[in-house]
Amino acid sequence: MFDFLSDYDDPSLLGAFWVTVQLTVFSGIGSLVWGTLLAAMRVSPVPLMRGFGTAYVNIVRNIPLTVIIVFTSLGLADIFGVTMGAPDDFELQGFRLAVLGLVAYTAAFVCEALRSGINTVPVGQAEAARAIGLSFSQVLRLVVLPQAYRSVIGPLANVLIALTKNTTVAATIGVAEAALLMKEMIENEAQTVLIGAVFAFGFVVLTLPTGLFLGWLSKRLAVKR
Image (cartoon, rainbow, N blue to C red; front, side, top):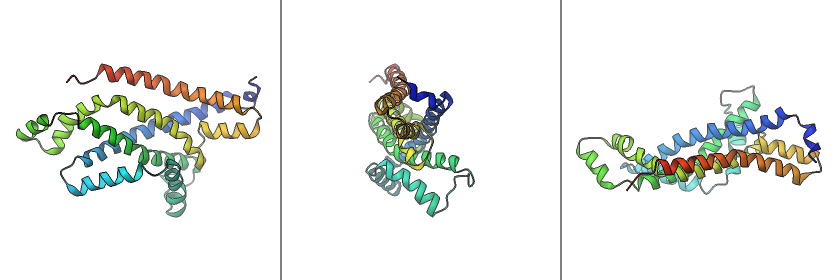
């Protein structure tokens, strides 16, 4: 029934999913950092920063991820010569460009999730912190963001799960992750349904435990109001 797997050794199959995991981890970390900065800009008292954050989120969220990923490859790499520190290693270059595109896209959703968490923090706490002499950045870092993170673990978990599935778009620029291997297997074999089921199961294995753990963590760390 699964004879088609004999043409693809385990390291090949597991290696493709390992690339998917790496894409998710690196993109997730980058998205959290950039998304936090965007959220800080969106609540900033400086109009220019607030305008940039708002424009970035509204524009990027309405551009298909495929367009962004293709632009990082054809636009940045081919037109502007951006090599991401790997001018001679096209596989590594493609991986890093895919991470860059995923970060640029996912950070917009992280920003909105965090901004909703920031809005749950009582205004009086920020005013009290300013009253004792803390600057805006200190209020945000010491008072607001710690509570905001705790209140949006659930939404951030959904963003992470969506990011894991969105890594399949990296196949469009030749990154050797799970979706690219699945496409190759479907082209070479006549068992499309079984191949699709195997890879669907692989993504369930990646995303389901993550969702369950972060859901439990969200309840564990929920801010009591």
